[in-house]
Length: 508
Image (tube, rainbow, N blue to C red; front, side, top):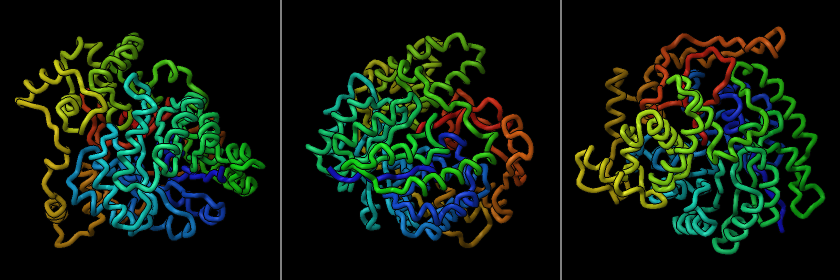
């Protein structure tokens, strides 16, 4: 038994889950010295939806964010979430883009790269892992947790073994829906420690209310590192409170050694800062038992409710929820995480509204023919044949999807130069443009204006939304149900917000 280590998600996933990823870097920097004193194993501060939201809504350069945070928090490792061959975008990129992205992220301050693939296809994280190891940084492979008839404890252990063979430094169980039950966590952690032998890191959202117990049982089984969130940005769709977990293990062999008084000071800071983001705050703060019944991420559930409302078909929700496991099975028992949760959710809605597979989204077709990688189990072959015929293909793709993509970074750079009318552009801007070609050009034009400013309301914060003073800039039209958006940020559906944004929720 060893002391458990803590990775705090307050600078990324916590505010992504509860505040629609809207926290400004300027609201993170004042507390940076105290964060650096805590003794965290890591602070997650980048990746996920932060990159997208920075340029889409905050008029912030995400590369500046990580540089500033690393300078202000020099003694604590910085961690990011990387979607394997998707990097931070929503498509597969050529290897040269992934290699360069990791290189620059490491240069600017990322120490730990948490890399995952929605299908748990090792081929889709291999390039990123290789790049991280070349940069002499920590490569953590995250297994997308799923509750399907296919996904047994032994299946997850075998995935971990494949990831270990890639040379990763640790294994993370990425429980994006909070569906990892405490005793399953105990069994899974035990077997991972016995059969894989790498440090085990547990990431479990609090949405259905099991996360604290899940983390405790995982630690009892030998988990080395836990993801938590400082209490003022914990629970709901976020994570277990850091202070709570620290207190639970005090005086035991797992004692974290962290100072609860210092953590309380940090929590109070963010409690005040949170007032600025009242209009973005998730209305969901408790435990949602529907997640336990539907077995899907909370964001996916609220997303489908919104979509059905658009179609004046709210009464079809139960039918859609019943359809999801059928679609998930037909698609090869894929985990429900970005982007597969959107693909399955949309198809389930289509099936109920238009008849089963009478209308199939482009993304679903790509998934079925192998453009996203190898599904955990074979997909429905009758459905695959139907899609192959519609796509004028003779057979599904079996090779690594990125092997079909020629090197592209030079072309992307030249396209950006031509677009901006410049003779040279920074490699960071090239990568930003590669990730989000639709919105990056608008950001480049307004970047010099500086980030947006947000003010806490001067009156009753419980009834008046925060005033948002945004720099005028074009905003992409909201994505609707017909297609999966190619670039859209993670956010929470909130009842009080007036902002015209997309209706997609990315549970990552």
